Length: 261
Image 1: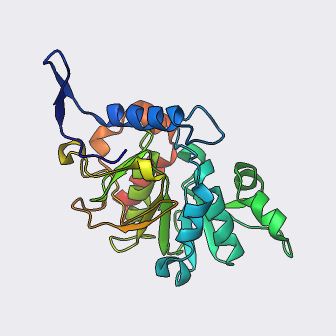
Image 2: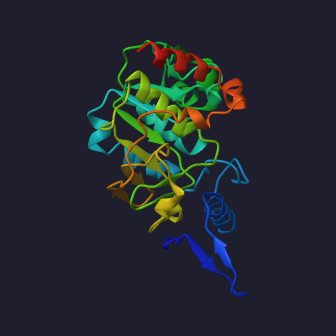
């Protein structure tokens, strides 16, 4: 599916069609569904799609030097990254996951029961495990994240990333940057199906609050990017609506925290 995506295209009628993040999402979701490249949960629309080969991509994550040498890894809670979460726990590393939809906090640490076997580690890697075997991380925590694994709907060879459109990954990263548990040098890795990797995406679609990726991993390859977009340093507070403050209460806490720095 990989191709160059331009800022606009002409259809058969000669009309110019503007390419947007949403149009790219729809194209990728539809391609995955039509070609039966997706797994449960389906349909993949409005999700970080669970793609066939997700476990193979996860295994390649564990081969990275960035994975081997790190101790604290933050992984998104979506289904296609479930096996990544298992491999983090199996390697006896600290696994952090975002608090669901950031409603009650920023991050949770998965704490498996003492002496648990691989089957229990697999349970801890699921959405059930995130709910039942985790403790919240305080904003004042001195923990330092060594590696970030995130899901994507589409990514480009130059590191541009498109998520499912809700902005939680971008906001969550900016929050972590503000409190100092990640920095510009913290690697960001995404696992996707090969068809989710596009040759290029128009730079004008992206802003300073969009999180780029450093490494793309598919079931068949490892792609190292040279992102032309810097990682977000802060939250663009002017874009945070009253509704968003209500939806994510920790934003208000973080804003007050930032004022007192």
